[in-house]
Amino acid sequence: MERIVIVGASAAGLTAAETLRRRGWTGHLTLIGDESRPPYDRPPLSKEILTGAWEPAQVTLRSPQDLAALKADLRLGQRAVALDVPGRRVRLGDGGDVPFDGLLIATGVTPRRLPDSEPAGVHVLRTLDDALALRAALLAGPRVVVVGAGFLGTEVAAAARTMGLEVTVVEPQPFPVRRPFGDRIGELVAALHRDHGTRLRCGVGVRRLHGAGGRVTAVELGDGGTLPADVVVLALGSTPATDWLAGSGLRLGDGVECDALCRAAPGIHAAGDVASWPHPRFGTRMRLEHRMNATEQAMAAAGNLLGDAVPFAPVPYFWTDQYDTRIQAYGIFPQGAEPRIVHGTPADGRFTAAYGHHGRVVGVLGWNTPRQARMLRRLVVERAPWTAVTAAAPALGPAAVN
Image (cartoon, rainbow, N blue to C red; front, side, top):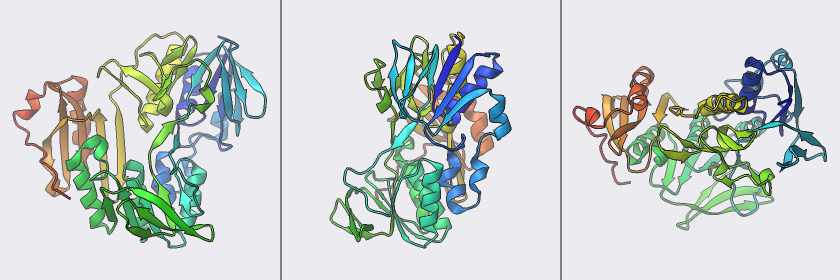
């Protein structure tokens, strides 16, 4: 291959470019990103950037000198709009195109929105510009409603409460972060937020937004109630950014469907939030929107693009920081998995739990126990029998009825 093109210039795309160069590939490399900013890290956007603990420059992943060392054709502020697989070209929004011998797709995801038009004061959070706009709005001391209580929604709520704002979280599920961790962990997250003054409206959805003078004024709930709001943050999840691949012939289900080598077609691989692949260890197809996976999968996909032919089989790792609590997770947490406490207790605010499914340990969760969670990761790596855990570990316990 003389020309490799990477579409997506965030963590996965940058890591893929660095992997190619580190492996000694010296061909023509093009890195295309639809944002004009150089590659930056996303996890701090919902925490340190929102609260003002970090300046925007602190999320930049590489210095200008490091980027120059890649000897890549950086096409920042350019959007890929179509892929011509037979012609081996990526078409850009400015009418140009870029030829390739090898292609790596790392276009990530886009935030979901409500179906109706959104008045001023309604925000999503995906980019650094999104975070800066939301922070500017929060500095005015508004009443904030966060719609969606997954990781992003609860992190935004925690940041806004840290700033002393009046915050209400609306979630159709009975508990926050119910997926992936289940009701009991969701109940503990709910208690954490209530202890810090966040109002929770779980078990109810949003019917529509109300506005006056072009600005949002309230959120109408599915039960007929309304919540006054000056700022509304939509944390409704994301969809893979694959619109530009329509008509390309690639299989597009929940993302770009790849094989175990992260290969979507000959000479075309995908990595990061946009990639779906069959995980050899867990025997299921998955797509992960986790920061660590962006790095690991990009390295694997770049290596396989160069001919490694090594199946991608990581132990997934992800985390969330909310107030003074860090929740870390290794592995997977399928519906119906059984949790057991293997260290500490929820009452102490420090515990580690293992999750069993089909007779094996498939996941480990640490609540303010980073060292213990990291040590127990081996249970997932070794696919330890669930009986080895249940012999001594008490059940995490059922969630109380809301």
